[in-house]
Length: 367
Image 1 (cartoon, rainbow, N blue to C red):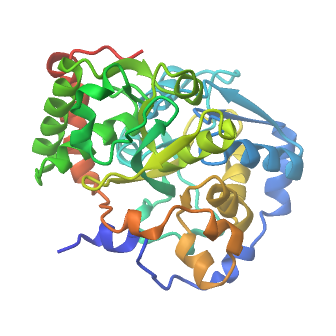
Image 2 (image 1 turned 60 degrees about the vertical axis):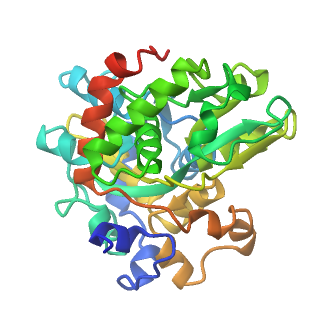
């Protein structure tokens, strides 16, 4: 039986949310004025080619005239949380106002008193199970883990997880993050574990570790963080990454080299990311205005343009607000048919096994 979270977040689920009239709500004049007085928004871990963030940031700056101070674009979710902790008493440029982290990081950050509750104008169109009831964090978008392949180098594209162990993929397989701190990499290990047939979250995490230990022993794992540049150069010709990252890299490389994005046949894990405002944000009004922007129809469609399924996707689709060209640019729906959405409890159990045992089981120090 599907969990409540899986039912609500499934790509194929068409839920009728609250009236879409809220989607038209504009931020108050007072909030806009307060944000402009602060003058700056500080973000962290937002690469411009991740989920369309380059256009989102540019759109926010153009619409409201604020500066955006972008910290460490390649940071992982754990790094974002540590940045809040390290800058609790710092109102300078190293203190993030907002974070975008993996789903499991939201509740723990709230429990640690690191988040400032705020409910955006479109709050009622966000599924209940993808948000904290108090407004401390809320889902923003989701995608699935895929293989991003440089087909100039890899002629026989891997179709499933077990293929990654084949001798033909020597020195080829990398993650798009460090599995000790990056949600994207943690979920990649978890997905590989599910592909072995394990159902229990802790056991799936451990099975994923064993799987990548085998990939490493075979000489196939490359212990560096894969990016579009390393994909193109051939140093990491196969990167396990979110589908939207792979599709963005494919577009940016414009066929030089050709890139194929493959959704595996088993172990298809969908990951929801969440937004939150730091409880110690130096620019709290700018942070709230940013939230209003990215949860507006305009912001949500910008994520979709970046190949991410925005959290308000069903509401936008129900109200015919998604341009046909954006829908046509998405990968075939059948690739997502087997996707599972791990619950928070499952993510926590899988993450605990993976982040604490990566060094001892796999032994590949990702840099």
